[in-house]
Length: 106
Length: 252
View 1: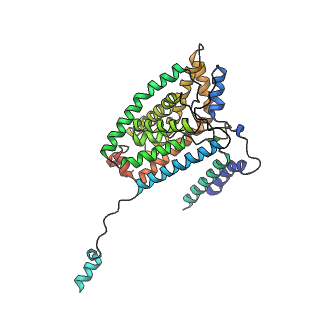
View 2: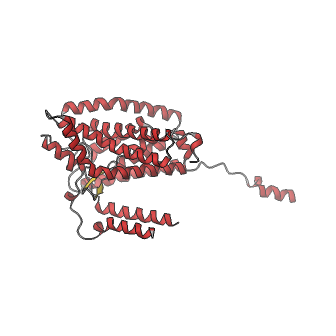
View 3: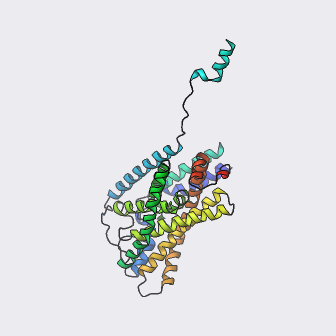
């Protein structure tokens, strides 16, 4: 029942994205556009072009992908370094309890 | 087992949803040119001492114990990725992003968290057309300083009152996110108001942020709690080392 409920909730959110037309970029503006820039414009302040403007066609998409890849790699590498168990030096097979027991029997 | 299945389904669905909806977007930081020079310079002046203290702390921590480095690297990557990941909020029809300074404030302490956030914001301003160089100081103050301190103090305060780890983590993440937007509203209102009174503009900006940031704050809270609990399960010794937990609290 709980699983069904979870799937149902997921579908409600995911279906609009999966079916029909993809929403246009303008339909989901960032809050900087919807709030910051809008209110600033009302008070006579406008944005300037960034020093390095990557917001040109798919360049921004590429830069975001690159940044995500590098960031993901660093995160994964650091996570592995954090979680890696420190290995104890392996003991020689002659020192194991079984072998010791065997030797006593012999 | 069933719980794992549910979590897997939720994660898969959320991933599909985010991939289908998300496009590169400027999301929250104050963009280039919005603040007048005097205010931009003022926020730089506020941010610089904190960055210097962060650098000093980094040197001390690195000299003491090299095992902190992976944690700092992880937090730097987490703050960078999270703070340039636009998340669509269906209830508002807009996109914004969590900040990640709640979790970094808890795990690294506020000064290292500010340093990590400053680096993330600088890269975003330089290459991702996200925020701006002239507004970097203001963005460091709101996301780095206010977010990190809000997360750190909330977590410490709740833990001091005996609140459990996940609730403390959730509340710290939530308040770190909301504090960031409170800071942005304050900076923006002060910078653009001209001769108009401060409070009406400040309130207007703050209210305009609420439909997007209310749910995103909850998301950030959940992410923060999840990460704290995950580290608690996998490396409780690390949380003790970072003074997030006391030695006797690892079994919680």
